[in-house]
Image (cartoon, rainbow, N blue to C red):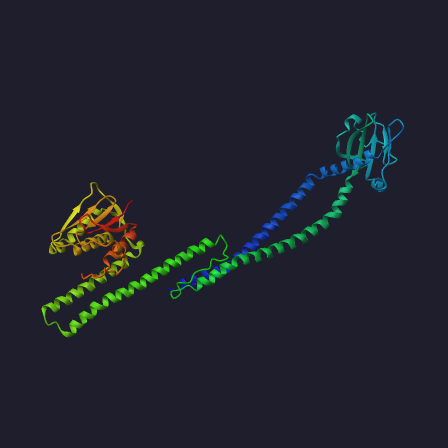
Length: 466
């Protein structure tokens, strides 16, 4: 029957073992982001080169026209009769005259300057007035050329410069440069990705180092070392709140363990004395009715203490309570009926002041009964004969007033501690009743307090709404 669970546990452990570390995942994420960005940049550049290659060629040719315009040669009548380029500027036209050429036309369409012996217009199908601003691919002697036309005025006369560049220049440039660029980009991209991933991994390890220190400290926390806390020094600001919250949990857990240890020690001490006395009387023999009565009283005291300890254990977990719609008036009536005999025997009158309208709250009816029973029973025990215990119920809460000696101001917080008893107290009791009241109130989110009663005694109030 246990085999499926064992295998399921092994499967979960294997799945957990296959989960990559945060450092690896972040490094891979960085590398992927870098590679994606690089591919996007290369793609955009390629697209721009394809889509706007003509624009780049035109801009390059426009730059060349400025050199030609500046090299115009004028005659005595200030007319352009040729172009005199420098050695560097004329190099392309001399060595690559088949693929690079220009013409200069006057306003009549006559070619006044040419880069070669051929003096035909490069745009024969267009009149000279239509040529300025033109740029496009034009076939010349069976080959495609990029041809552009630009106009410039010289001493009041308009001249048109025609510049032609073979598309073979672009093709040769791509064939020569593209492989080198591709290899360079691939090499640089690979090296950059590796460096980026390594730097990312080192950075992540540096960031995670304080977290690993916190992990080591967390493994050292145990039942015998609850004082240990996770370090917050050099902790990343994003993780520090989580570590501080965990330390707060450890603080509450330590306090809870300390209270539990004190509770166990006090319970053992409280039960030890009546048990020892009962054992001594039983060993000596019950020689009289008084001995028998005392033994029964001590057993009743121990029974009540055990019952209250069990109730404290039950209300320690608020999630274990069975909440439902409860009418406090019905619970109060049940409590007074339950304690009517004890009050009659002590000559105490129990009075219930009912609310003006119906009151209904969400609560555990059994726990509420125990809370109110302890308050009323405590009031009966401390009230003198012939007095009245007043129970007042309202929509905001419930209060129990007695006519006893009251509670001094300095003791009004201590009375809710477990096993606490006032100095000089001679009445029998375990010191758990009011502690149980507070536990039940806290489990419901209620507020319980102690103050002076109007008749001079003590007044205990439980408020379930502001």
